[in-house]
Length: 234
Image (cartoon, rainbow, N blue to C red; front, top):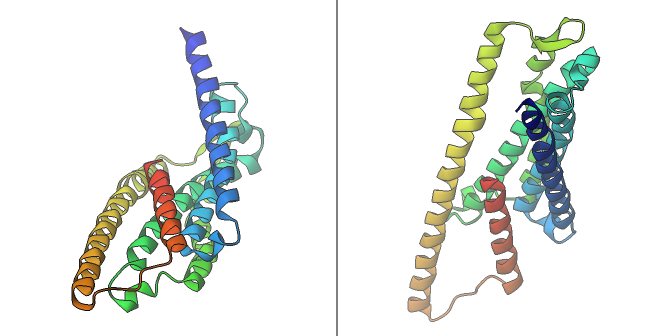
C-alpha cells in the first residue's frame, strides 16, 4: 500500500506538471505573434502563461521531488527554502490576477460607455503587464521573512499564527474571491454582448444597415474569448 502511495505521489503529479508546462509554452508561442500582441486580452493571457510557466517549473522542484522521490530542495539550502515558496505562491497568484484582468478587459471592451472602454487599451495593458508583477512580488515578500529553516534541513513556516494567516489568505483570495470575480465579469460580459446585439438590431431597423467589425477582428475576438474560457476553467 505504501509503495502504491509513493508511486501515486510521483508520476501522476509529474505528468500533470509536464502537460501543464507544455500547454503554457504553446500558449505563449501562439499569443506572442505580432498580430496577437496588439490585442489587450492577448497581453494579459501572455502574462498568465509566463506566470504559470514559472509557477509550474518551481512546483516541479517544490512538490513531486520531495513528496514522491524523497529529495527536498528547500531542505538543502536556506536560500532555496525561502526562494521556492516565494516564487511559487507569488506566480500562482499572479497568473490568476492576469486572467482576472483578461476577464475585466473583455467586459470593458464591449461596454456602451466610452469611459469604461478606454480601460481596454493597449497602453494600459502594457503598463499593467509591468506593474502587476511588481505589486505581486512586493505583496508576497512576507514569505521571505516567515519561511525559514527551523533547524538544519527542515524548512517550514516560523510561527503557527503566520501559517494560519497564510492559509486563510490563500483560501479567501485565491480559492474564493478570484473565482467569484471571474463569474461576475463573465456574467457582465454576456450581458454587454446581449445589450450590444439589441442596439445593433435597433440600428438596423432604423437605418437599414450598420458598419460591422472586420471579419478578421470578429474571428480574433471569438478565438481569444475561447482561450480565456479555457484559462478560467483550468
